[in-house]
Amino acid sequence: MRRGHCCSITVLVHHVVMMGLVVNVFSSTNNINSKYSKGAIDHQIGSNAAQVTTLFVFGDSLVDNGNNNFLNSMAKSNYYPYGIDSNLGSTGRFSNGNTFVDYLGGWLGIAAPPPFADPTTSGAKILGGVNYASAAGGILDETGQHFGDRYSLSQQVINFETTLSQLRTMMTGENLSRYLAKAIAVLVFGSNDYINNYLLPAMYPSSFNYNPSQFANLLLAHYARQLATLYSLGLRKIVVAGVGPLGCIPSQLATGQAPAGRCVDYVNQMLGAFNEGLLSLVKTMNNGTHPGAIFVYGNTYGAIGDVLNNPERYGFRVVDRGCCGIGRNQGQITCMPWSTPCANRNEYVFWDAFHPTQAVDAILAHRAYAGPPSDAYPINVQQLAMINN
Image (cartoon, rainbow, N blue to C red; front, side):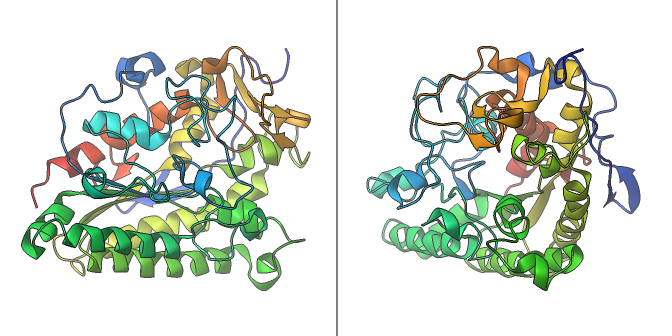
């Protein structure tokens, strides 16, 4: 059997504490049914009735929808074949089509918010929210600096304050408070702090200065401060996504550090401290210290791990290489301009050396939107949207 076809890739299991119990992170879908199938959730984005009016997006290339197009950065995707399966073409999304937040917005019935860096993102356009996400950006300011300009988490929070200044000219303080309390904020951070910082010892000293547990604590301390800032600025519905199994992405498999059919286990193991700590942080922030707010943890590791360990259940056949890329596992060099991607993109888990296909993002979005507490804790995004602030 040719490696990567008709078989799963073994993802090392680590554990996450949920609701006081230790559960396998890959047990989040015990009974797969039609509502979690790829076909069932490949719906028309924007076809649902609006459940929220505003979506603010913070993060990295997993949810960047064009900010880096306007930055002096090497981390760009505004060229073919990125966007090959999108009617919008190459927008700067690091996908063959839609991203996680595009699909999540679809379920919420709200259009994708415009990128902050676009000069036209102003006036009435910002009322539905803004996307601040930036490829190569991380929780730490120095993360991804070898790519050039990017918005780190702290800079994205500053950019959000710029948006607030504009909104204050458009509504009263009382109305702005109500507006922010009803908005949903999604944060997707952490991946770059590992693959474009900690795991690059030739460029960054972090792995010499911190062991994996210490580094996770450093990230979480920075993250906690910025989440508290977003709360102080008025946001009350905040979704934070954990980091997926980075040891399984094509760029890591291309290092040759994993046996055939396995992920790079030591990379996945070090993520446990961060994901468990992020879940713990969410629980702490929900314990009454932030009145009126609900913080939600998205179990990205578990959801992607389930797909990788059970690909045929979701209709995938290729799990160990990118659809578009060069070299071993199509992951040594990521998708280059005008390169020819695979034809059967819906059968691939990974689009390029680092990012999932839109088919995977659709699954992740639906599990965040409608999944059980093992997918989204303590409530899912659909339940979050229903809360009346």
